[in-house]
Image 1 (cartoon, chains in turn purple, cyan):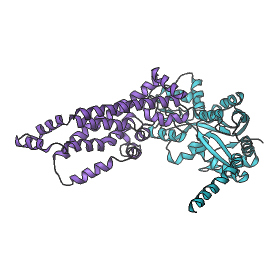
Image 2: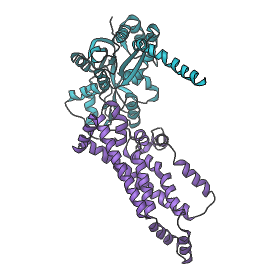
Image 3: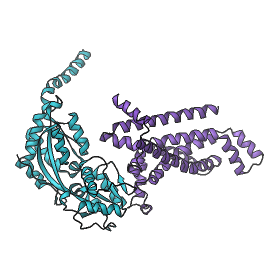
Image 4: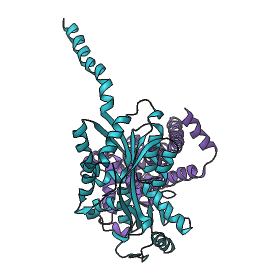
Length: 226
Length: 271
């Protein structure tokens, strides 16, 4: 209880390191979300709007990849980025860029899967109507995109929620370097064991706060769409 | 009938535990030590001999020196084996520990890439080497975790009278093994105890660049936690282990311990 009070005091005092760690987490996770959505939205559209051989297989694969543990992704990307790996010369291991790489890969399946689901769930008469009017591929995509604002935002929020709270990728690829790759989750995981309990707890509260806010926003987005 | 049998069985299984608590407490020992000591593999050679001899069981909690000392202050362990002399003395002065004894020593080394961009190879002044690393902006990885190694590192920086900061100075907050791996990856420099480095040598391409400076001397001490801190402290058990590790037999095991053919620790304990 006493530690909880100390943690709250730390938050309210605007502790510089606390702020820095929180911002680091946000910067990294938002960038991962951005890169991942640039890849996943067009990809989801392509899969959703076309029928091709092996489409079912692709969908099954994407769904399975969603369940991949973060430490596995961390391990795989680590072996790519390590000096002894193929991309070692990039020298980005133990930097924020490595974490971003891992987190982007982490949420690709979720984003693709959720966006695809809402495309395929779209009222088929919309697609029919667009076809009837001879709408071009690009125009159809544009119309559908605007119809899908809400589901896409929901997918993005879900993806963000996944990365802001993950620790496997951040720890293995970031290295928990102070003022550099130390994030909310790596601090909680690695610093609390060294007696930095108030800091870890304060960050835990901040993370819970972010998660609540996120869920609230998802709730709003979903309900407003109805 | 079945129900009664069942209850009887449950009762019988609980019974031994009721009687055992008095005795097993004394046979159970908790020791906090540092990650470097644990990583070296020495304890895997020492503890089984002690356990067989006395029938006791030791649980080892390996954390940074700072945390180990905190565990002692809280009475969460019965004894501590650490390597930060000034802090050990403070621990005893503040009445948290009694009966501090020398156990063994080894040394710290400054490691870096073979190319040695900061050109510190062969220097015999640790603090000066650290200064050169800082001036050449090479990556230096710090334990950053209040461990014995971190304490020594801070001591060396203090000697240079400049505070290390900047993107080249990486405070990882992790154990020696993790830091060595990261240093290797980043072609950086770091301070390490010789033992952990030797035990990981075949996985690293780092080289020993600076050694032998008296400042890099690394003595280990063992201290029994003051039994007055907490009623559950196994003081007699702690003293048994301290006697063992400073005995001829314990010292022999320490001196005979090799890793990759190298001697990691040199016993200087006396009974």
